[in-house]
Structures are given as structure tokens and as C-alpha cells.
Image (cartoon, rainbow, N blue to C red; front, side, top):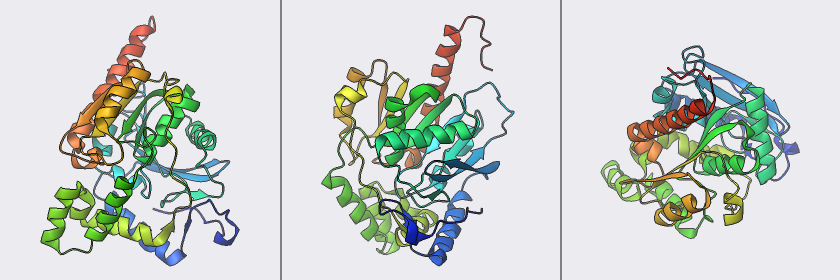
Length: 320
């Protein structure tokens, strides 16, 4: 998988992410390709030009299989890229065309020249990506930091969204010390011997520790790429209450990013009709360590949204 030419690191603004050097970048891309190989190969790749740089996008599934079904767009978490969706793209793309977006500012094949961490810029960037792909209506799915991007889109630029799904997302609570401690301990655990590392993976709810391909990708990403954005601020109650896009939130029961029970009450109270579910026996990565169940929940929610929209349009043809 190729990458666009990079912008000179010497000319990048201080708040724009960058690779340390070309050699580490290529080693990192090789590790990413090993993770991509755990799932189906993308049907196509594309580079979408935006006001903030070039965004690399992967498409899965035959586009003509279900032409009337609303496509899915996946937005990954911080410090990652579209390879993280390897447990999900096969099931999702069997029913719908799926696009996975490499977010500028994270290690991936997108090339950033202007920061997007400001909420309005982030919404503009994603809207430009969807427009560049020719997508007028999508089911947007985001994990972790990608969950903040998805929620921010539903708040600021919802016109292209049929629904928004958040997987243990940012954007609902301020990122606290316990989450950063979990990241530090997870990184430290990668140096543990195999048997101890497997026990730590269970204790930390960290599937990266038992997947050699994921572990190589994550550790090389830390070495190869410098993220230059601040942690996003959560939406206030007033901002969350503006969301009218059908909203689906999956929270890890042992999440350290947020407090699941608190959000189980808060989100439906502020967003009428929002569906909030807690996934048991997991922490921050339900789409990885409970992939089959998560995929099923995502597809059922999207089908329900599309079914309700079809019923609301007189004379519309039901989905097959």
C-alpha cells in the first residue's frame, strides 16, 4: 500500500503531527500491512484532498452489492490508523460498502499540513472527506478519539450523517489520569515475558498484548510518529443536547476513559432516542475483543435506522 508524498517536516506548524524520519515511517507501514492482512484486503484505496492535507481512505466490499444501502464510514482511535478495523470490516462490508479513514494527525497514510484538532476544523475536514468521496449520507462510526470526531460531527455538521455510533468514545468526559496510567502500564507490559504478558493483557483489558502484529504496529507507531494535538475537550450538556442524529453508544464495562454507568443515564437524557449499551467483560476496545458481538450490534442499529427512515418516506423502496 503506497502513501502520498510527505510534506517537509521542517515546514510543518508545531501542532501538526509528523513522522520522525522516512526509514521509521516505512518500517511502520510494513507493520501496518501485517495488521491489514489479518482482515480482508480493501477493494480500493483513494486519497482525498482537503483544506488540511491529503486523507487516505480504504474502501471495502463490492460497491454494487447493495447500492441502496447507506454506506459506513469508520474513524479510528488516537495513535492508530485504519488497520485497527481488521476484526470488523468483513462483517460490515458483507452488507454495506465500508470506508475506513486514516485521520490526519495520527500515524497512517494521510498527509497533514494544517491542524484539525479544533472542533470546527475537525468537522470541516470530515465533511470535506465525505464530499470528496461523493457520500451524501453515511453511518459514521468512531472509536475512542474517533468517537470524539464522530460526536463532534453530529453536533456541528450532521447533514451527511444517517447515524453516529461511538465505541467507548472520547467527547463525553474529560480524559483523566487513570486513562493515561492505563496507556503507560500497557506500554510497559509489552516488555514482559510471554506468559506474564498474557496475564497482563487480561488484567489490563488490552488485546494488543496478545496480538504480535498489533503490538509491533503500536510500538513502532510510538517510535515513528509524533502526535502534536491536545486531548479534545468533552461536549458540554448543552452541546450534547443539540445532537439530533440517531445516536448509538457502546461503552466498555471496565472503561477507564469514561464512567459507563454515568453515561448510560446522561446520554439518553440529553439526546432523545439515543441507544446506549454497556459491553461487559471489556474495557476500551469492544470492537476488537468482542468483535462479533459488536459487529452485530452495529449492523442491527444501522438496519433499524434505515428501516425507520424508509418507513417515513412515502413510496420509498424497502431495503433488501
